[in-house]
Image 1: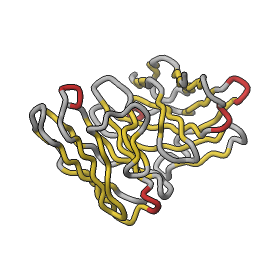
Image 2: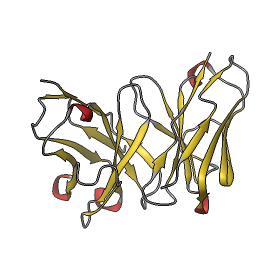
Image 3: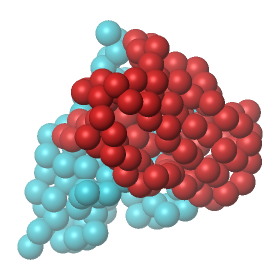
Amino acid sequence: EIVLTQSPGTLSLSPGERATLSCRASESVNNRYLAWYQQKPGQAPRLLIYDASNKATGIPARFSGSGSGTDFTLTISRLEPEDFAVYYCHQYSSSPQTFGQGTKVEI
Amino acid sequence: EVQLVQSGAEVKKPGESLKISCQGSGYTFTNYWIGWVRQMPGKGLEWMGFIYPRDSDTRYSPSFQGQVTISADKSINTAYLQWSSLKASDIAMYYCGRSSGRRDFDYWGQGTLVTVSS
């Protein structure tokens, strides 16, 4: 099973700042089969990025994903108030699929 | 518009059985996998398994194999997650999600809260 470790656990930033979230895999994620989701309190997760760097439909340009192999990054170029949430990475390269433990982006 | 609508919150006693549902609309239900994800109170997301409604091909995470059963009825565009004997440790929010080719979840249900209490 691929273990995904996200860091930091909590990121304290202000609106307008840049957020850089990391997701490290215990073994290589083939084909860059990694996604990022945003979850706000009381809501279902929302897909942001798939295949490491492709934006899902309707996702603002300030969100971007990068990486390959075992190291992946989600970047939010300039935080908007609505971006404060928990972010999860998810690998679907091998079974069982797994999620990271999450990074909370807080004000 | 693609939608996944899950059944409502449940309160059950330990040892009782339960089946929750996820109904898809706005797309061809048999062309996509439906996955189930657990979120325990205050915790992260856990992948439980998938089903392909066209032929009921089902895959489970080893952590959930034997603990739950995933099924689907393609005639009514609905996938299910069921327990034969609930435990207190099953208390969680359960989400279904749509996936193309057993990949990312592009649409999610609203979640079903399962509470188990004597």
